[in-house]
Image (cartoon, rainbow, N blue to C red; front, side, top):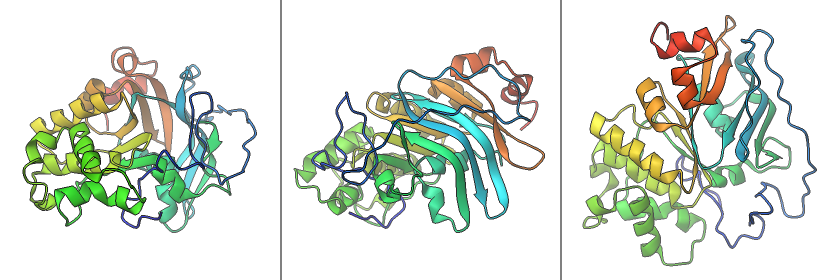
Length: 313
């Protein structure tokens, strides 16, 4: 099961795959059959030059944990010593000025940066306790569990139906495809708008509809986590609100991490916020992590207040 397109690679194995089945008592792990993952402590070190915040309150049920993560493109360090947790079934927003490493960190969560020549990561990105950058972890397997929706809608030059069915077909889906397509489009709040024109090209839809089609295509393969890189930045206000309402519904079944430059959107749509800034060395670092309400009403750091109030950035 290998997917060669950007959106479709963000897929997840079917529930019948014995290598990845999970129960509530045993969180899912990314590993080859038979591999064992010993428990390891989580380091929470903070960069010495970053603000001296109180320690982040670790969520009770983190889906992803970044620990001392630094990301390099060749000799350039894009982010340095980043540590934060992503709670399950919640929306986590990454905010900060351009160049602070938000999209780089987002792509690190499902190893999309591996596709960039010369990139490397120091530290650990853990998915339910498993370090995704361990040598025996298959990055394609990671992308099956952690889907991604990009800034610009990118439907395939296929019908609406075939856009949604593309990933499941490549994964060998054998159940009722019509039901899966309808369910995915309903979850993406698009079914009522396209149910009578499933054979039409996905490229004929409006921008907001195309983005929801891409979300339907992502969730058709049932990932656990959905990463969204400014999914509404190219959309009109009405379509933006539809995407935000859709995210609120999806978090019941998925964990969502979103990058946004829109402070109002972060305040409205997210449960938890990570604020990043860029240092003198142009490397991004975490300034503050907290519940969104606290970040936007009573931040601990003056730098955070300055950014969300529009004094810089």
